[in-house]
Image 1 (cartoon, each protein chain N blue to C red):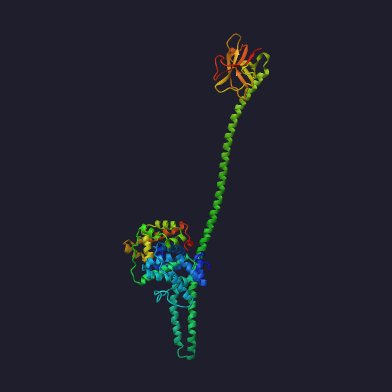
Image 2 (cartoon, one colour):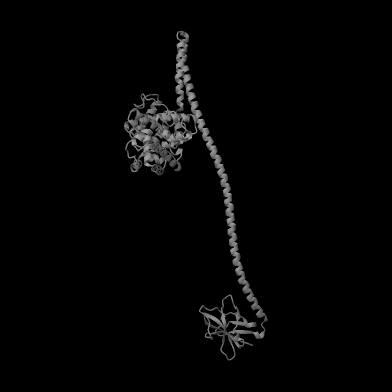
Length: 199
Length: 354
């Protein structure tokens, strides 16, 4: 069965209705890199990240029929991966520590991370959204807002924790998170991003 | 956070809620609000989708070796009926549905509170039936079915709640769509009106422009008409002169050796006016001109005017010098441009007054 040209929604339906492993393969090939990037960024340990990756796609296989249709399939998978990763982080009782991976306002490192030639990230992003739009969009988010977003999204920190860690007033952190996310949403809408652009 | 939040407060907190960056009591307050007011659910969904894009901020990391193969092997093994935990992490971990920590309102958790009370009621029933042997066996056999039935009922209730929620969201979206459609129709109508006005305006501008061009053309025609009228008047006057010229007021000119084929007639009118009609006299280059002479008897020729000859005109109206009223002969010579005081060039036409 040729599934490679179908939409993510169609493929998910094939998994749910027909239990077709090839459909899962296609979904895996499309999204595993981004999913693993998210997991690895959160848990940091490659062995644990490997396990969480397996769990994530196992969950996709098991719960394909429960996708509500709201938002994109990719977003749903990322959410599963993120939740599992954050659960794992909490189970390890590790205090969330933002990793100084060059994202603390270092645009060069950010671009370097995204721009590695030949990586699957490049291929995945190219597949679903132009690099130009993505780079432009991310560059338009001020560094302090992006940093707060990353601490919340990848490190599972609450606003209070972010405020304590960065020694910034809580109100400022709240504003940065809110405006950063609003800006991201506006930029992608303005760039013609639609739900189906992220497959 | 026991104080009920307002719409604005909840809307402000939604991004942090979606990111899971709120304290537990804040999450509770928001979910309590969303449970009662669905108006922000669409906004929540939009923010949730945007937040999903943050996944692309993660730096790339190389995929584990054979991860794909291991996953597919596990899936196929599961299909074949063999059960094994996928990972060490799975053992002992309750993998509930992928409800994110804060991305969805936990309204579905409500039925969980009711299931504990149902469990207690079931236990009481079993105690009351103890000692009734036959009935106890029957009740024991029926109990799993009853429990299963109740659980299915609870699940159905949960699904129903979710369905109601989805229906409400759908209705809200439907209302928005209808509103947008109405606004769109209104805009289309306004657009049509504006198009019509624009066309009318363009038509008016075109008419004004056309009228201006016609006006300019009309003025040009009037000027041309005036010039032509003047020419006509002059020619009529000359014709009248010719018509009334008698024999003694007409001088015939014949071509000389310099212009053997040329000829001409000078008609004399009142007030020293004259008309010179020429034939077959070739036009001259620009540095030369024909000049008319009135030659009195025994006196030097009197210059009587320069003659501009071209292919179109061989008919010239003249105003002759008064001192030439008494003349015996008429001549035309070739002179330098601007004329001469006395003939210097070849004489091309000559005639005597009868």
